[in-house]
Length: 407
Image (tube, rainbow, N blue to C red; front, side, top):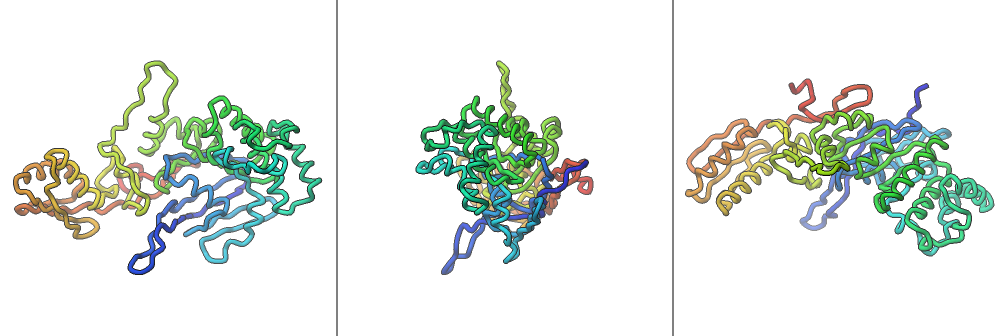
């Protein structure tokens, strides 16, 4: 029997305001996640991986309804209630019911628990806050939870600073479970714990899922944690999903160049083993304030094509940096003509041959270029708009090299 859909995420985007405007200043926004879509079925465990700034925690906040969507909708199909949140004004009804159905375990068990409150009150707080029942009822629930999360009854009268990091995280898990949710988000739940405690907490989380049939979403930097805990995985970069599918398939054969680089970064416990260095010719980090043309990973990709999305700004920077490394001076100015064309003006005529060599060396990114004295006019290829390509029933990847229409 196939599991039914619990949560359906449909083309959601989230913008953060980074400049409020006023006077001559304009409002500015950072697009934290863009056009995210996937389906979470009952009993699934998903992991979301990617480097810092990829949008993992923003996605988690969007799923729990703590931030407003800029675009898209999220549909929740809980056992006794259906809830939809949307980017449209007024489409945030049922948020209290949503928060009752979703639990969250935060990264740092030391800052996630109020140091002035007893453990029993920390665990019962969501139950009391949602007015689910009386204090006598919450104590019955806590008594049932204690053996499930591996806590002794005496700890209920302790304050958080009297417990170790591992025990505090067990308290956080108990608090997430107290309202009997259907979905739990774990935001880096083991990153602040030592290795032995990490294993204990991960085993505990898996054990709870076997007992309760809960649905999980894990946010993690640790690829091996994702491999151990989840059946499905999402790879994010600069707010975009670049690859998603079954965890075993992605670890066995990563398709996107970024996923391949991530997998190559996993250290192996073998004497003499050395990590393979990425073969990317250029390694830069996008800001996220403006989403790059074409593929968001193109400026770091070792196999990028001229159609992957190069902009005049990027190539001007490349030419200027290469010239500086070669001669110790910039020696050029640039004029952007359009989104796909620009002029390089050689200020110092003594270095025109060096500029010509650099432009020739990068010519694979240019549709055409022509020289006129000390001015080079460069036309770029029109970027190919990347899209999620369905590889099989579970696997999707966003890369034009795998797009049959592009080929």
